[in-house]
Image (cartoon, rainbow, N blue to C red; front, side, top):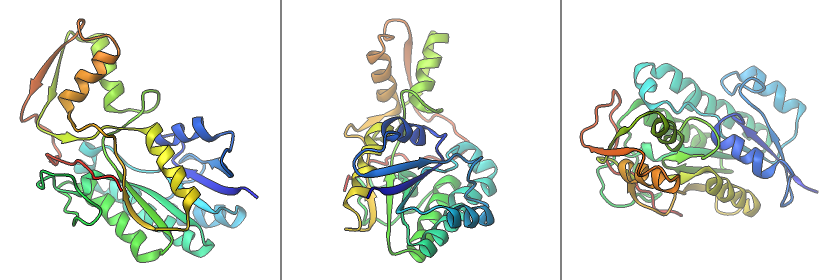
Length: 262
């Protein structure tokens, strides 16, 4: 009998990638996709009702607040989704004996290490987004024993959502000059690759629960990544790319967030 997998946040870039790849329910897993309108993880009552009517073996939580700049200005929104919502989900997963697979971020680190972060490094977030995600991780660890926390970095889809990859393409089609920072270093991660990694975790469960790191294999600055995007879309000769240091953001950003995959 196939195992049932719930994917929350199904309208986000990662959720849509899961839906594209796994709507046909391959590899012994039956996927069910719910958007925020169908299942708001910040509403404990709705969660309880939903899970009382449906049985799942796994829950892949793609629901998240990822606007780093706005999280700094309105942190209560980020904490409501990334922390309180995750706590709600962890509670119902514990009650229903569901394995939770939760997506976290490289921004739980401060970026001062200057070499790849391992799962054993102590987090120290420097902005409200990172703090809200770390608190969500702690809720999971305190409530559950059967879980996977998957930290990833610089997540992008070439098809879905609002992300750096699509922003560079859109701007390149409208603007002749693009200014991109080179003072942050990380590993861009394609949602397709991340979704495959997560499904493999589900297939191997219940072995080796805990925290995992998964990111792309190339270490780049945002400037490097922008140049790569323009190159693969044949836009290098149409758009001038300008390297900028000390790019001003409202939210403080970690300088180096390369993750060591494990």
